[in-house]
Structures are given as C-alpha cells and as structure tokens.
Length: 368
Image (cartoon, rainbow, N blue to C red; front, side, top):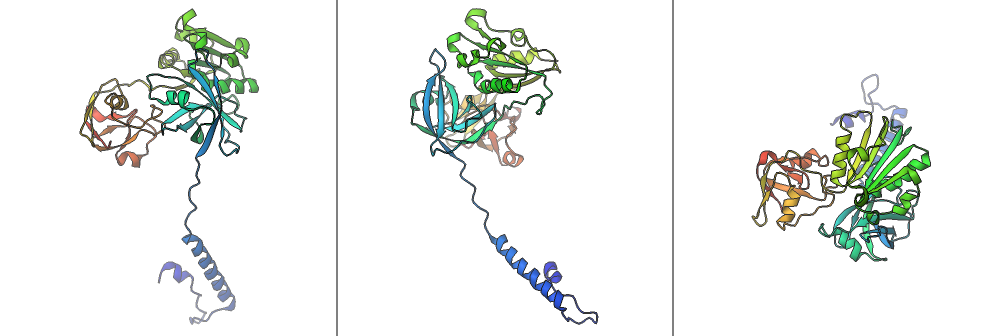
C-alpha cells in the first residue's frame, strides 16, 4: 500500500476496529472525488504552443537617403490586426521570402500599433539580404516576424537609470534605433544632445526628421569636416551623461577608447557589423559532409572563413545573439564566446560559428 493510499483510509475507532464515523466517511468520499477529478486534469495534455509568427505586408516604400542607398519600408499585419507594442531600441527578426533571416531596427513611432517601419541600406558585397529587400520587396510583398525584441533598451532618469542627461551618437544607418530614442527623450523633457555623422549629407537617412530637433543635433559629414575623433564624438559628455551610440565599428571603438576610465559616464552601444576578433588563434575546421578543410585566420571568424570557402551556413546578426548560425560540432573543443547558448546546448556540441572558435587553436569538425 502506497503512502497516499494509506492516508486516504478512514482511521480506526478507539477500540481499534475499522468502524467508520459518518462525518469521516463523507470526508473520505469528498477527498476521493476530488482526487479523481484532479486525476483527469493531470492526464490532460498541455495546450499546444501558440503560433507566434506574424505575417507582414509591405504597404509603403520610401527613399530616405538622397543617394538612394537607403529605403524605409512600412509594414502592416497581413490580417489587419493590431501589431505588438515596442519600445525605443527594439528590432524585428524578419524572415525574407528567400528564407534569409535578418534583423532590422524599428525606427517609427512606438505608439503606432497599425504599422512598423524599418530602414535598410543596400550593401552590394553583403550576404544578399539588403539587396533582396531593395529589389525583391515591392508594395504588397509579404514577410514574417515573431514580433519586436529589444537588445538596446533606452532607460531614462527616474525610470531605471541614474543618468542626468543623454548623448546620442549615430553613424549613417545607425540612426535607425536612435531615432525613436530622440522622440522619447524629447517627450519626457530629458536634457539631451546628439552628433549624427556620415560620409556626406546625401548619405544620411532621415536627415529631415533629425533636423526638426534643431540645435540639439550636430550633423557632421566626412566630406566637409573629416572623420570625427573621439573628442568630437564625446564633446558634450559631462559627468552624469549616458551615451547611446550606434554606427560602424571604428566609430564605436573610438567612443569606447574615449570613455576609458570615465566611470561617471555610462555607455550603451549597438553595432550592425560583426565585432572584431580579440585574442584569436588560427585553426582548421572540417566540413563533415564533404571532408572540406577550411582554414580560419587568427583575426577572422569561423563564419567568415566558411563563407569565403563557399560553405553554406545560415547566419544573421553575426554578433552571437540571434542564434541563427547555431551549428553542431562533431569533434573538437569549442571556445564559446557567446552568451546565448545554454549549458546543455554547449554540452550537446552546439556552437555559434559567427563568434565562437576552436579552443586552443585545435581543429573542429562541423555537422555541415
């Protein structure tokens, strides 16, 4: 007799015989009935995971950089429903008609639940995603997403941040996550300033929208004033400032170097390109399906080497946070440099080829 069954028996009378009291009998029947009902619930299967894929339709296209290299797409739910809300700094993981997965910052109005807006710069020698957006997504085209995600959130004074003021720094297409932040800071009455840099005025997306903020924004172009130094970028960073920056790698490197040792200035940044390899060692990766050997240089990523060798490997963010490039390692030890994979995934042989490497310069065999 199990412990539960033993507890469900009515207790004996004072004389030791199994004479059931009426009240105890009623209680025992009630417990039995409840146990039977709960058993039915315990045998029920959990409800299926809801389908969170959101189908989007392109409802408008607009050139937002006068050199025609950047277009903005306005997207609406294909079924006409309201879209999930988002906050400044959010992006969409978008699956293009080709199956490519790409991340694009939301640069519209967070209060608008009817449409999303993204902007995409054409990159001729990239992975093909931007060209597909430019050439293959006319008005009426459909694509899918799982909704907004935020890896670059804006925290404001009094709402989770000790900052007294903001300094925004954007380089070219890096304006996309910053643009909604400007409107939010303005709405909340937070003191802020911004430097917006690029090759030329014609290459700067949304320059008309940025210009409406007047002298809060300094627009600086390389063809007139040269490439900005760290001092130029951080010229308005007094103590108590929080910096939000998005742009090319050299700009972000200059900002980080310029703020070294300044504990009274907080820095948040987002990059659109793969981070530079730090302390890398050369190694060799083998493709299990073909036996092809791929040499990976000390200063390049495994993903870069695979693409250079025409080995097909899915990817998107190239920074180790989206998980698209998750690949199984058949043999070899991995130097994990991401914060996305769980310990069971790592123990199971998974790695992110966009950022992680072979440990100690050893060789890896990939399930590709």
